[in-house]
Length: 322
Ligand SMILES: C[S@@+](CC[C@H](N)C(=O)[O-])C[C@H]1O[C@@H](n2cnc3c(N)ncnc32)[C@H](O)[C@@H]1O
Image 1 (cartoon, protein in one colour):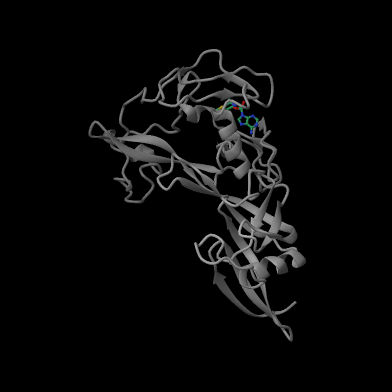
Image 2 (cartoon, helix red, strand yellow):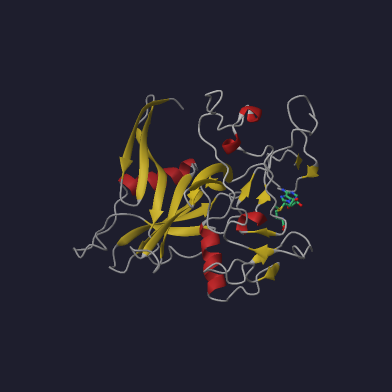
């Protein structure tokens, strides 16, 4: 099909595009819906949902009328025939949120069927069943699982080793979990949330001798005493550390690490900060790329081969790290 015209329509609850194939009529196709989660049946299954069409005034204190097969409803109908993916944002009641509601982007769905039924007002309402495209990491499903844990419906949690690795240091408990193998966690480990070594490394954006923006790293021998950054800088969290100590390596990580300089007691102090590099759904494991050491051998001239076998399971897994 050749698209010769395309424009966006934004509707409450249903977004769609109108496309026009050469020689054919304009055809709306749904691109995304927001499921408010308040209609009957728009409910709780993380793999599918039933979405009510728009219009008919059923929720506007006006005279209710039959919904019409137009705009968003027509777009959903056309998408059912076409089989295109529709992005779904699922709304949920959440007393912890200021608005009493949160919205979770839940990925791509396709529409599997539609029908008309009488709503509470006695008027015709369009209904659409949407099914989540398989193979996507859970998002709304995670959210529901968290709530079930909170309600105590799913205890004990699979692979739970310690309910709170912080021994009360953090305001919220951080569970130590291994659902991969039988290892029971470190035999000696002290959870700390403050700096153990507070010596300040003076680092500026500009190298004081060369003037370049390497933060003192390009020519460490030429650094004056007060720019004394140990190179290589080794951070060991074997026996002491915080939650970051338990973050695993992934070849498709969702987090990136960066050294940042914070002020501590009037002195610049290096911290390793973690930044999200993509959407991270609730309860998803946080991972970063450990990289490969410079001493590792080149496998095929382009990829460096790490020393440890990688079990990250990502489709882009390099097979090794470290
Ligand atoms: C900083 S620790 C991460 C937390 C560790 N999983 C634990 O339970 O203590 C790093 C160690 O975890 C293991 N590890 C982390 N990511 C891994 C991966 N993708 N594949 C295999 N082992 C991994 C390796 O044994 C690695 O030396």
